[in-house]
Length: 569
Image 1 (tube, rainbow, N blue to C red):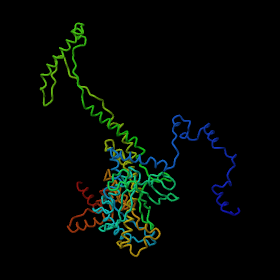
Image 2: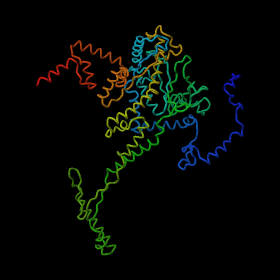
Image 3: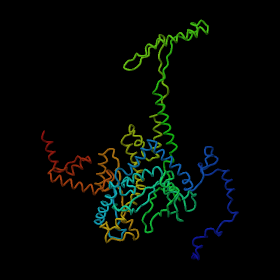
Image 4: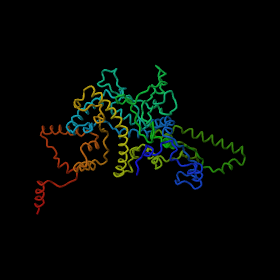
């Protein structure tokens, strides 16, 4: 085989050239191909235009940004309104925050020594992790709320806020600030949360080319600059009403690599610039479900009232006999009869029994109480099916959302919680961890440049290569996994540890969301106090036997048991 003589020989004809292109007569025209397919039908029934059920279903074929950008504002506004006014959806949002973040969000530093060009050094890694975690957590969880530029939230509060915002709008937007004006701050790094509505094209221009949804991109689609309104378009700003019509451009990152804008969303299609809430797919059903509950509640109120009627036992034919067939005589008789009833019943208005009025009826009359409405399907399988739909969209189990555990057992609850745990773990990784890691990187860079990280001195430079990622590699400890049967699941954890299928770090994070080093240090302190007071601690083997259900005793106890059995004989 001869060697290629040119680029064209190696890679084929260049794009746009006519070389290698089939002649016009070799390939049937598009119109002809369409006519042929229309006659014989396509290979996929779901794409058929001749199917009666699908004939009128012809959605437009558009790019990701064309689908999202023009409907995003309406979809986000509706999702927020649903979250504000639907108790079940609001409960689902709280489940997201509690299931992803919980009551604390702790740093678990894991520097990569090999990536730093160093030999693996477990001692240095532990010393580095202890120093960085203690200093970062002191700043991040301070009651002074240093991580938040507005001084409203700790790191945990910011992450919970980000998770809730992501559920409603499908993206999180914030800027990394360096506040020089407040000298009292221990660190000038802070995060400014920004409503994603403010991210838009300057002066409302149409998204086109490399400017889409307020993001200026390079030719590969990477964000270069973010155009953010100086105020929300619906804000009432008395000091400067022009702020809502002014935009500021923020670079995605500074020239030396420091993150400037935090824009987090999960891309579901190629070339997608902005995120959109996952609630959009169920907004119609959520709205209908709330409307249904409102109607059923009104029906229940009406059903709780009664309409009363007084009926006479005199047959209808008797009225004609009493009137003698004369209409005037019949009317006169009826008027006299009703006057007598009124006079008779009026004398009984004060007759009551324990505050309840008793009607005193004219002889030949009776009181009929009739319900004003009929009941509805509230509390039935119909309502449960609606709640299951909402729960599926929110990624939580029906039992958690409805608080209805009447039809659940251990197996079904364990299966439901496993699915919820998978969803929450993915959301934690995609949103909460990314958001918290950027904050950690910003803080670490400042603390390092101020010389406050002792264990990093004499180590490879932070800005060389990918050292920044190697130094700030980490995991985050959030909420622990729910345990339905603590004994069974603790036994499973002990078996995993004894058979080297897990680690203390993983099990403490899984069950309690705790730092294993802090737990072991606390146990050492407690053991020292127990020894000092002369208390008898529980033997480890006895504890393991109790947890694993192992009734076998030690060699010292076995003979005693045998002798005890022989004694009665």
